Image (cartoon, rainbow, N blue to C red; front, side, top):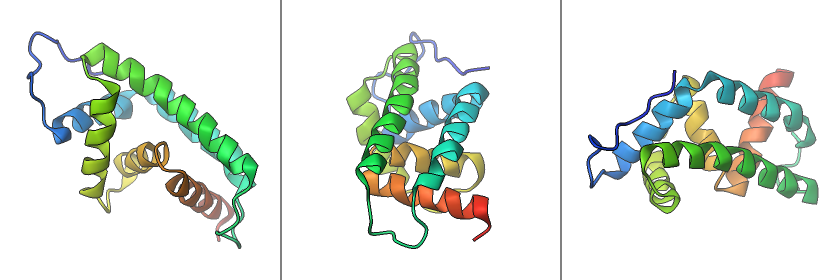
Amino acid sequence: MPVVLDKKNAAPNLTSDEIVNTVTQILLTDDKFANELERWCEQHCDRFFLDDESEHLMEHWKLHEDFCNLFEKRIEACLTENGYSVDEFWDALMKFVDGQKGATGAEGFLLEALRASTDYRQFAVTMRQMRRDRSGK
């Protein structure tokens, strides 16, 4: 069940961590979205080369754009539901993720997926790692 903040009770000057924690918690509890995102990544990770991390095809950039659109739609809905601005969230996310290196499990995957949605190179690294994990290499 998604967490929804009552705007009457929301603090007017939330910190970066509070904004990201709220959105992360909402996204972590949205099993339908998590499953959709994981299926999307599994369906497309084989397009990334394991042996040449420097090669980036036009197709990879298009996949990144599609991934961004998938994430942005869900995040914008989440932010709107909770009274946050998109710009405020992306600024907070970058500060937060930099301080959360080494997060594991669902939270770690979500943080990496969020970062990948804003950073093509991180997206490519994440997709290659998923391909390695799936192929056992």
